[in-house]
Length: 277
Ligand code: SF4
Image (cartoon, rainbow, N blue to C red; front, side, top):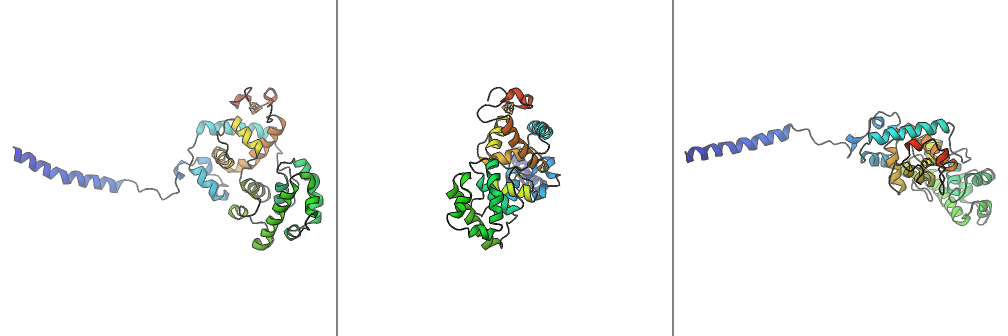
């Protein structure tokens, strides 16, 4: 009897092993897709603009889980803001990518209105990247003086324009990775230029955007790149640019930093911070 059982065991073992091996073979192969791609929301995968999203942001979005409820709330918020600010667009005066880079550098710690007072004369005086790169010491500083922090801004403009001349033949590069190599150009400025000049999908994360998306519960992060990815994960790429512009206008008009005017806000039903911020 004991002999029989031992024989049975001896036969069973290799069968089990073989079955396991076969099951392993039959199992779907590990995806060669980028990590997290399987989680992409359908509005990203099917978006006609998805292929124009920069690779770094694509990867960050793919690492985030989809959130249907939050996506639906974000869409409703975007719809209301779209209705309230149908013409929302970039407020900085510009005719080309170079002018918008310079205007965005000047807009740090300064209002768009003030920048717009300075730039028409500035661009007329220095029409090319080479002109700005070679602007006489002290003169460029005087030209942009009223925008504040003029020494640092002049340094950034000169250095950035020098790089545009030396490495890109005087033309502002379109690729995100190239833009980010320019002095004074971080993702915010790169997104401003790409979305407004070449209509790439992108989110411009400024202080208004950071404050309001957090109040609206669309993100719980403080780091601009993480906020950008969180919000990008909720809306289809073709809606990003207008959403940004309208959020910024909403911040200036209603959801102000010190005292949000929730009484006048159209988003109270969708905002977890309503009458609490
Ligand atoms: S309800 Fe209040 S806190 Fe929320 S978005 Fe509107 S103004 Fe801002």
